[in-house]
Length: 391
Ligand code: NZQ
Ligand code: ZN
Image (cartoon, rainbow, N blue to C red; front, top):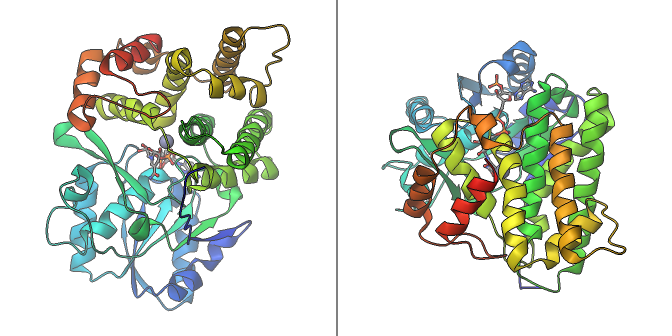
């Protein structure tokens, strides 16, 4: 195990009716005037925005709102939010939604206190020195942004979907997590979220670092539970306990706990971000195509952890089978699981046409150079093979 620092300072307030505490939380975390950021309307239709406003009013806080954040959030909404935050002298950003809303809120938090272009922090041109504080009311368990120090934004003009990682500035001050808020999710959004949180653990579990027995053991336990609860939710979408497990798992998958003491991988995410940047598909839907394809290529050069995943997470019985057979069965079972969730594992089916692999590879090179990943170092020829296996 490598040396590590683990700091997850977000105050998580979990359970039924917890959104009623948002005003008191924001006040306690120093909010003056609040900018509420939300998406395309689900939070208005469910009455959540009204309850959040009641809670802010009860705490004596003022607010303005920014609506219309789209999935795979774009820079234009960030610029709009930065201008609004500056004009209204906002001191606190409150995201009410999922990863797209939270990531937009984080980008606004960076841009509102910076005289230049917020994109400088995503392109790597500058390092931020400050950000407004961000709070979250989570409505979809998926991206894990409620506990992460990351934000992912798409620059429309260049089709670049890039992440900024500044944990000291971007980890939310608090995250309100009421599993009942996820009852209104369309099934496919629940499924995309499950794929995404599992992949956040894959990116850390499949690591070249050895001697990480404890981290691997609890990572496997979280993955097994998500697989179980996902199938429960497929049959009983209003099971509070299954919704609660999946919601907490989304946070544990991506707040850093599963990556302590390890070199992380992140090749699958980078391969997917190119797809959602170019074709605007949901992030989790792209990952369902690419994660099994990544395993096929990576296991040829470094089979050990993928073999262990097949046995300990996918419950493959290794008795009498070669390593290759166990791995092939584990990957097949993962694809079957995605199909059981009603998802496709074919990029061509997802996008509706064969993706332009040359364009995806060229963009990856431009954004990240010639190598991706650490479990195995993947070259552009490997990226091409993974995209082809995912067709
Ligand atoms: O916009 P509304 O109307 O709210 O609808 C949303 C949206 O259409 C809907 N939704 C959310 N909560 C709902 C609901 N519908 C009914 N009831 C509810 N309770 O769900 C749709 C998807 O929302 P979105 O926020 O896009 O989902 P998700 O949380 O999966 O976020 C995806 C984004 O996060 C990024 C992804 O790349 C993608 O852009 N990621 C961010 C990460 C981070 N910041 O750490 C890490 C991840 O790997 C990921 O890359
Ligand atoms: Zn993800």
